[in-house]
Amino acid sequence: MPKKPTNAPVQKNERIDVTFLDLTHEGMGVAKVDGYPIFVPDALPGEEADVKVVKTVKNYGFGRLMKRHVESEQRVDPPCPIYHWCGGCQLQHMNQDAQLHLKREQVVNALHKYMGRDDIPVHETIGMDEPWAYRNKAQVPVAERDGELIAGFYAKRSHHIVDMDHCLIQGDQNDAAIQVVKNIMKRYKIKPYEEASGRGVIRHIVARSGRLSGEVMVMLVTNGEELPHKKKIVEDIRQEVSGIHSIVQNINPKKTNVIYGERTEILWGETYIEERIGKLRFALSPRSFFQVNPVQTEALYQKVLEYAELRGNETVIDAYCGIGSISLFLADEVKKVYGVEVVGEAIRDARKNAKLNGIANVEFSVGKAEEVVPWWRAALGIQADVIVVDPPRKGCDEKLLQTMIEMQPERIVYASCNPATLARDLRILADGGYDVKEVQPVDMFPQTTHIECVVSIRRKDM
Ligand SMILES: C[S@@+](CC[C@H](N)C(=O)[O-])C[C@H]1O[C@@H](n2cnc3c(N)ncnc32)[C@H](O)[C@@H]1O
Image (cartoon, rainbow, N blue to C red; front, side, top):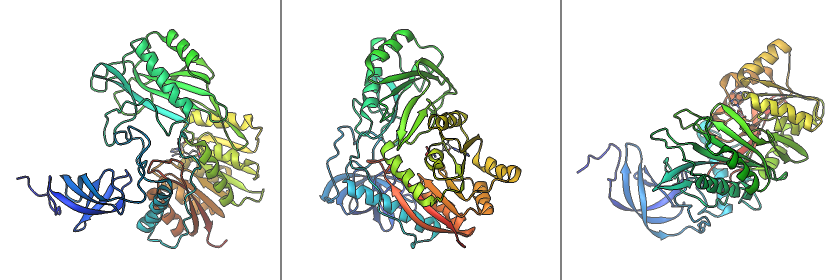
């Protein structure tokens, strides 16, 4: 008999009747046996079921749902035929209202857990009218299985590709472009990259599109310089991908899970495609970060603008500015915006975007926000009235937070894609003399557990 791990009140293969109380970030139902959590795929809060325990470790276990006794009113049939295998979405089995509610709860819980605060107003999540076909970028790994070329997202918790003909959250143009490239690879017998041996040619197919411009960029991420039948492949992509504007090759010879290599070469067309948010035009280079859901990006930026409470005479810092989209969105309403971003290519795009939109009161710098902002203050005497931060999932660097506290801007607007690091950082700002006024969650990633939010923060004496 297997040894019972400490704290586990159940054993592997045991059958138990449970009631689900919660959902994990990966969309698994959470049930508890004597306080010991058991995570079960395809189970929703409020449901009751017969579960087989499949794994136990010290502080939690996993189960498989054998029979559902009570079904949640929030449950819907997931429209995607591969939903249960593919790891791309986690919430298709939950109706839209319940998804929005769950996302708000994630934020409320993080504020409670990491800040010990239950008094900060968290608004209802702003959802999409049509929460499908919203993504403007698809990066799809390719492989060979049983002699067949497959392309799709990784299965949940694995590196096993689930072959896909159609993705319901992808924009239609990207979706079609991925299938075209997959067929072209078959036509010219281009070998996909093989993780184990490090051999093969194409690692990922990437398609990016501008929702309003209709322009499409196809990027082939290859294992080396060589791309057999390059000319024919480029010609076929030009003929077969609707809206094609740019074809690029990114070279990644390293044995790594990181998708992109350092070098990117243009094979045909422009070096960028265009996207629009509100009245602004944005040029997107192959490697620059851009929000994946342009419809909701506009809602997010409107909130940033509202929370910035601009009067026209402010100096604003936009830290983690990407291709300068927030800086440019605010520029009309202020005296000056300084943007800082660590990726040089994104800053080149930001400058190009400023010109494209005829905006002159913005200045962009390449570097780490935590190094550049203190330098702006010390060497150039820049004093911000408003600071906007939009960091990656790991949140703001503590040095940047300290600089912000020392700089004493009247208002801070924090856009975040990770409630846990957001709450951690808000606590530092609150301890540094700032009031966290309110939080607005925005559903940038329908059908997934991810959530974005914008927070209004004010200096306490204001
Ligand atoms: C969530 S994105 C936000 C981009 C932009 N505000 C937007 O709305 O598209 C975070 C950005 O921070 C950049 N970044 C990551 N670490 C950084 C750092 N230490 N300093 C400055 N930028 C950084 C990333 O390259 C990325 O462009």
